[in-house]
Amino acid sequence: MRRILLAVCLLWSAGQAATARPLPDGGVTPQEMVEVLKAGGYPVEMASSNGAPVINTSVNGINFGIHFFECDPGGRCQSMLFSASWHIAAISDARMMEWNRTKRFGRGYLYDGVPIVEMDIDVHHGVTTEALVSDLDRWKLVVKEFPVYFRR
Image (cartoon, rainbow, N blue to C red):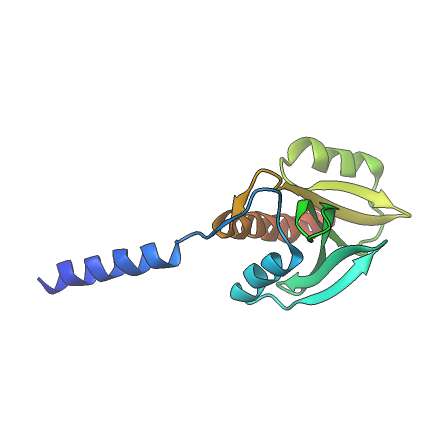
């Protein structure tokens, strides 16, 4: 009986944790993304780039930015770009093309010899907070694997 009660409690708490809050159509506001980041324990620093909002944050010691695009006057943005860069010596164009050919998520390129990886997120037609957490989880895997891939 105790096992059944424990199982029911665990299922109930898992359901509570997985409750997703839908966000309105038309995109995500930087503040909504800040709330998702803070709930996940990410540090948050607001900034801007060319007048557009940017959130600077990090995961596992890796700094990255979340750039917002196609924002309406109310601050709801239709897309986001996760972006990180490293100082890894001597990466060839061929090796970067191999990354892009073999990896589904995380587009890589060299900018003045600095390797950068980016991942676009389209939120124009609405999204849930759970979906944003999923995107962050996918991004964590990309930024974890990217520097390791080029050190082999």
